[in-house]
Image (cartoon, rainbow, N blue to C red; front, side, top):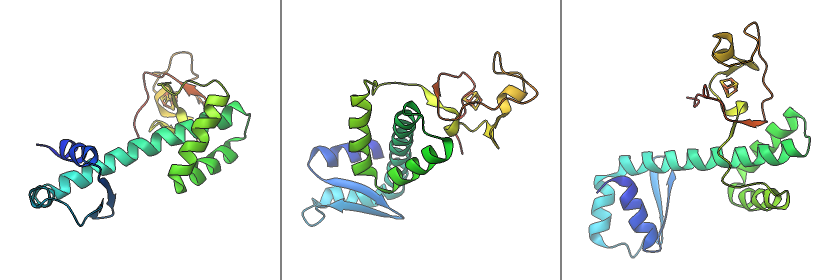
Length: 160
Ligand code: SF4
């Protein structure tokens, strides 16, 4: 059984599991069955990596949600960036608040578009894929896309 399945099994059984740096943070930890403890020990690094990816994904989704709400309200780029940082610092409350805000504005929560602000092709505000002529309609001499407007772009590249 892989790390994602073990994480799922634990959550299904009512445990909370998170990564805390190099440690697994499991609650409640005092009544974990011995076989589960053994499996956790054996797969600790895979589980930590799976939890890290999960958190990365959750943070990216929240950042996008904040960007959508703030952009729709006409906020300036710097303010949207700050709102994203504040939301990520207070993940649970911010997720609830922005989900509500998005619903109030009639936004779909299953929107699969992304923003240039989260794209690995954006450097110093300019799209590097456009420079290579890969973004239809964009000026190859310098294309500065609107960072927080959601779009579907074939050239989107995950950062990192
Ligand atoms: S490749 Fe697409 S998503 Fe990425 S910065 Fe350029 S226009 Fe934006």
